[in-house]
Structures are given as C-alpha cells and as structure tokens.
Image (cartoon, rainbow, N blue to C red):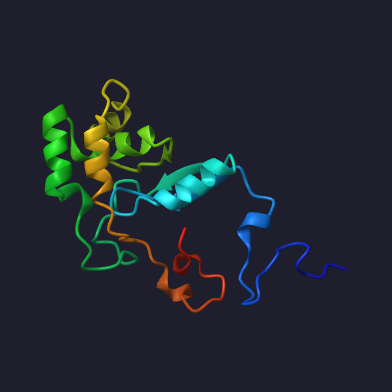
Length: 162
C-alpha cells in the first residue's frame, strides 16, 4: 500500500519539499526570458546537471486570458530592440540567442511562417559579453504566466527564490 512520506519527497519543518535531497529529473521546463532570467535557478540546474528548458522564451501574447495584464511586452523593450538593430536581427532572435548562450534550451511557438523561419536563424551570430550583461540587466522577475489560481497551494513554486 502506497504511503507518501519523507522518503519519497523530503520536506522541511514548514512541510515544503526540500529539492536538494530529491532525485531530480534531467530537464526542468520553466518560464524564462530576459524579464525573468532565473539566473539562480539556472546556476542550481547546472550544478545538478539538469538542463533548463525555457517556455515563453519570447514573453507571451498579452491578449491571452491567462496572461497577467499590465506587464510590459518583452519584444517591444527599447534595449532589446537596440541590440537587435546592432546585430541586424529581430528582438525575438536576440531574446532566443540570449537563452542559448546561457545554455538554456528554448521553446518558441509561432503560427507565423516568417517568425518560425526567423526562430531558426540563431546560430550564425553571437551576442557580445556586453550584450549579455545588458540583457541580464533587463531581469524584472516578471512572470507572464503566474497561474495565480494555485497560489494558495503549499507547493506553489513561484514563492520560492532560486
């Protein structure tokens, strides 16, 4: 008979899962983009040989009902656009290349054929260390997909700092 307990999911005194003692998956998929770069989580993942995969790597369409209203549109960011212009690329290509240079797998969804082709044109240019640092500075911990309906659950992950 199955009985959940600390031997399966170790917990601290507040009954929160202690992830550093769990047998971890080899890939973690999280919302990740220049406005939510998860630098601490990425560092943790790399230390545990976990590949981080970014969904919503281009931000998210603010017209969708599940997206938090009032967030800035990532691809309209003037700094991201200036870097894109410097490299003769789109802001989307710069945002995706930024993730790739950090070693993050990116998932970019589009129904637009032109954008799909652009999303593949990431391997013939490099962002400079200065570009990377500038894009790092865009981090605002903005989460487009908060899933706030679950925010009162004890294992709601977006309250923990990584």
